Image (cartoon, rainbow, N blue to C red):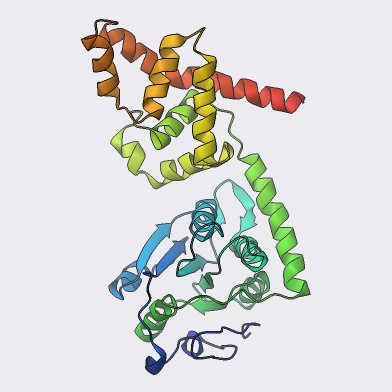
Length: 315
């Protein structure tokens, strides 16, 4: 099935039947003013080849993490950036089998068409030809679907495509209907992700937003990074999360003043060692007292967030 779209590359190519027809010829090449970037969602297996071609690649293991990364990179409030989203069409979201890769592509395409996101190339990738999956990806709004293994020439053309501004995803009534259904699935999955706010959740949140101590291995794990981003998103984003934590600190000034001070210092960018030394050097507290307060912060904050959740549910 050929893509139901017009990829308006600088050469003015028509609707392509392969990636070769999407990429401008040498005479039309212009060095991009902003380096291109590829978001590789799922198991694409093309990271090394694209990097060797001079394109920056961010591997994203899961669909939900990929959605989060794409939305942040392509936000309409920010300047447009050359972006190609390479999506493993066999990928799923762990714990949410109802969310499939074409649905993720549909939600991103809908937001691009609506102007909520800057356009990016949406390229689906499958390990074997699958006509039904290909058709669903095109219906969702993908510009093109490729089948592995890609030849060296195809990989080079893919890297070249990333250096050109993306066309808006194709759309028609059938695509719009599919995208509306996909939006309902994504919204349901996001609602199911609202955390119950354990102390471990809050420790991860603090470690992501502030210098609150986490093990280096925890910071480096992609799954933990994805979990931290979901926790931040549950509070409305990084700025909203900072505001919420500042509000909690302010509410503690009378009933837990030391906890309020220590939390505020973390939010201001202080590291644990500097916080402890500040109190000890001034003769205010022994170091063990400050370490206890630091260790108690996640449990106390989790209790505040759970209380706020309960109030929202009762409202």
